Image (cartoon, rainbow, N blue to C red; front, side):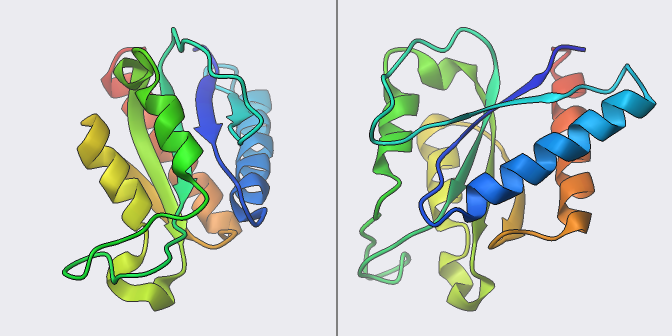
Length: 155
C-alpha cells in the first residue's frame, strides 16, 4: 500500500505535534506488518507555494475562530484560511478524500467547526477528530480510520 498522504496546517503546534506522533505510529505499524501504510505528511502555511495535488490526500485542520458562535451569529475563521485556499487551488479539492479536525471541546458547537465547514465546502467526508494535541489512543484510532478509508476507496 502506498503511503497515506496528509496535508495539515498547524498554528500553535498542536496539529504538527499530533501528525508527527501519527507518522511515527504508522511507521511502527508498517515495521510490524509491511501491508500497513506509512504516512507522508506535508505542512501547509502562509509560506507554502501552491501546487497541483495529483494523488489522494487527507486534510488535518484545527479550528481557530474570532467572533460569532459558528452557528447562528456567524463565524470568522482565523489563521487557517491558507489551507482552504490551497484545497480550492485548481483541482486540489478533487484529490481530498477526507478531513480530520481538532480543537478544544470546551468550545461546544465550535469544536472542529473548520473541519466540518471544509467537508461541506469541498464535498469530503469528516473522518475523525481529536482534542488539542490528542492522546496515544487517538493515534491508533485515527490511523485505523485513515487506513479503512483508503481501503474503501481501493487506493
